Image 1 (cartoon, one colour):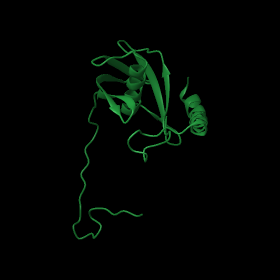
Image 2: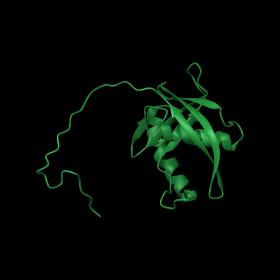
Image 3: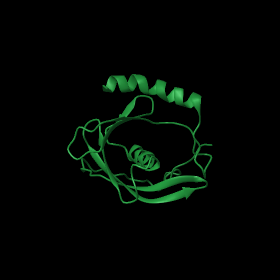
Image 4: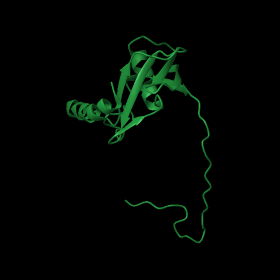
Length: 146
């Protein structure tokens, strides 16, 4: 599937899922709904167990395997009995970058079986940023509009 197809189809899939049901976190009802669409495929890279592309926002595809996407994939596979505590899953993004996910333990959230995942990846520093704060600015520590 091309990036163009992912960008075209993902909003439609997300809206169809939203119309069909609304997932709600078992302990925090303020966490609800669908924001991301994960497309799964067979891996292409050496050592990878699965491949994905994660669509989010209005028109963005995560270049990484996505920590949230990898965690959800681990939970899904564990729920199907395909992964157990201690098992690892190498998740590959559509551009070939990889995260190593692991099922650390099984837990229950309310009445819902769940897992505690861990995600391992690598990063490369590509720059540095220096931010100055003027203590004379009355909003130096930010503000919130409600």
